[in-house]
Image (tube, rainbow over all chains, first blue to last red; front, side, top):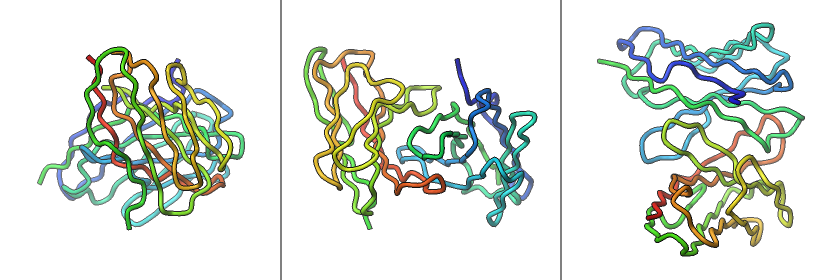
Length: 113
Length: 113
């Protein structure tokens, strides 16, 4: 049973517009969430994270929102750039350590010039 | 600044052959991890090593063994490869602590015929 779900396999947006990537989770023990970006033939790279004690975290063009009651988080990219085209993975963990990350299946974002 | 280095990048095996995937990190991280990624799936944790001298099972450990050789190196061994182990394998490392993200290598693409 998938504990972290990214229900949109792909998303296409125009350069300069907002990209919104969504993630839902079912395990109420999850209390730390991360987003990773992955280009083809490379490993994932860390993008941004959020603790369950917050509802928003911002880093430049990237903002992550957490709605604990809905068990939902989203990643906003504003403005979107062609170099943002990649697969984005949502991940979660619990228990105070960073050892066991549970990943979603990923969303392929394509930003069109 | 190499980060996490995985060797080999590609390998083709026959069913029943054995193989060791190598991983080394130069960031002086305490923790290291092995994941596999299958088409349309997120990354799944095979084994992890929270610190030198310790290893623990992840979500999908069957058919694999690991060795934390020293603080820098963490190897993954397939004793008798099976077609179901065809996958892309990623090694990662991190410092301890909830807010410490995992840093990934570029992967080993393994095909088992």
